[in-house]
Every structure is written in C-alpha cells, then in structure tokens.
Image 1 (cartoon, rainbow, N blue to C red):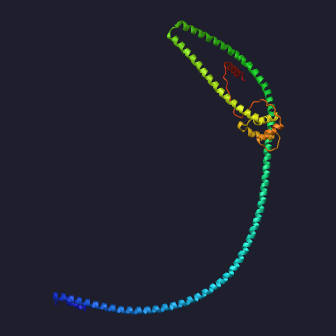
Image 2 (cartoon, rainbow, N blue to C red):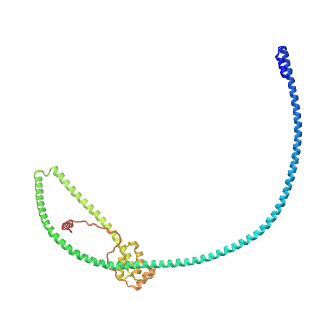
Image 3 (cartoon, one colour):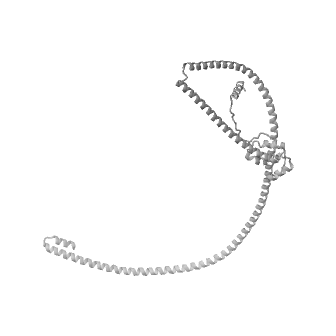
Length: 377
C-alpha cells in the first residue's frame, strides 16, 4: 500500500497542493495507527507480564516452602546428632582428662624426684669443688710465701758473698793494676821526659826571642813617637779599659761559678742529711754486721722507699720467721734484745745520680794535667 501511494504521488496527475495535503494526511494517519498499535502491544505485554509474574511467584513460593521444610528437617536431625555428639564428647573428655591427669601426676612426680636428686648431687659436687679449690689455693699461697722468703734469703746471702768477693777482687785488681801502671809510667816517663827537655829548651829560646822583639818594639815606640801625642793617649786608655773589662769578667765568672757550686753542694748536703737521718733511725737497733748487710741492701734504694724495703728485709737479716709487727713494737723488741752500737761513719749511697762538680782549675793544675796527658796517664 505504501508503494502504491508513492507511485500515486510520483505521477503527474495530482497537483502539488493535493500531493502535499495527501502526504500530510497520510503521515497523520500513519502516526495514529502506530500509536494505536503501540498501545495494544503494551497492553498485551503488560497482561503477559502480570500472568508470568504470578506464575513465577507461585512457583518460587512452592520451591522455597519445600526447600525450607527440607532444611528444617535436616537442621533438626543435625541438632539431635550434635547433642548426641556433645554428650559423647563430654564423656570421652572426662575419661581422657582422668588419664591425662594420671599421666601428668606421674611425670611431675618423676621430674621432681630427679630434680631433688640433681640438687643433692650438685650440692655434693660443689662442696667437693670448694674443698679442692681451697686446698689448692692454700697450697699455692704457701708455696708463694716460701718462694718469696727464699728469694729474700737468697738476696741477703748474695749480698754477703758479693761483698766479700768484691773486696777480694778489688784488692787483686789494685795490686795488679799498681804493678802494671808502675811499669807503664816508668817506661813512658823516661821517653816523655827526654822529649819534654827538648820542648822546654825550644820554648825558652822562643820566649827569649819574643822578649827581645817586644823590648825592641817598645824602645822603637818610645823613641820615634812622642809621649804626648793623641795616639799614645788613646792606646793607653784602651789598654786600661781592656784591663778593667777583663778583671770585671773574671770576677763575674768566678762569682757565678761559686754560686752554682754552692747551690749544688747545698742540694747534695740536704739529700745526704735526709738519707743519713732516715738510715740512722732505721739501723740504730741493729748490730754492726747486720747493719752493714742492711746498708748494702738499701744502698740502691731511693730515700722515699727506705722504710718499706727495710721492713721487707728485716726478718731475713735477723733470721726470724715471724710476721711483721707495727713500727713501735719492732723498735721496742729490737731495743730490748739487741744492744745498739755506735754507727760507723761510711759514705752514704743515695741511689740518685751523682752530681759531678768541676772545680776551677788553676795554672798549676792545668800544667799537671798536661804533664799527665803527655805521660799517657
């Protein structure tokens, strides 16, 4: 029908206005028909949807009812089985708890018994170890004390023997050295004195020539230069100033040397006096032979450590194996048992470095030293 209508409009039979009106009427009719068809289709689908919906709801209701009923029956059955299982579990747990309680009690009893036995064994072993350690420590301390005492005794013995040996060696050395030095000095002096005579002769000749030259020069100056000239005055002033300056320098140097020597001697005297005082206090109660041994032992000890070393060597020197007493008790006992003797005057060795004092050498001493060098001494 649409094709026939298109052919009708496409022909030349109808005018344009008629075609336009027909087209508009056709479009309006088509729109009404479309709306009517759409409404009918909607009503039909709505009816179908309602019918299908009711059927689906009814089917779902039946299905859910059956499923819920089945699930409720299964839940009731499972609940009964669970109750029975709980009852059986409680019965089994009671039985297992009793068995476990017995097992734990037996194991705990066994462990406690073993722990007590281990503690007793450990206590016994600790006592044995403590006794062994104390025994070994006592033994080591006794050995250390005896070794220390033997070292001190050996040192005292070595000092005694060394002192005698040094005396003998010194005497032999002095005797042999005196013989050799006498022979060397005699042979050397014989040769050196001959050469010395020749040197003295040549020195006298040189001195005589020098004096003649000086006399000639002085005579020449006095005869050819006037005594009132400025040169003579200046030379005399210069000589006077030089003489005064030399005397002042000699006096200053001598004073400085004297001051330094006095300071050194003062320090040495103070140190010696302090050491003499300490040694006098310590050695007064001893006899002469013990005093000599103690002086040899303390000769290399500094003044500050004299008392400590004296207390260390005193029992060995006196041949006593007693404990150290206090200072007052030791002095009292020594004064009661040993009669003090006069202390022999000896050279005190302080243990400090010696201070060498260089005396001022005079012309005579310088000449003696020169002769000794020439003699090979």
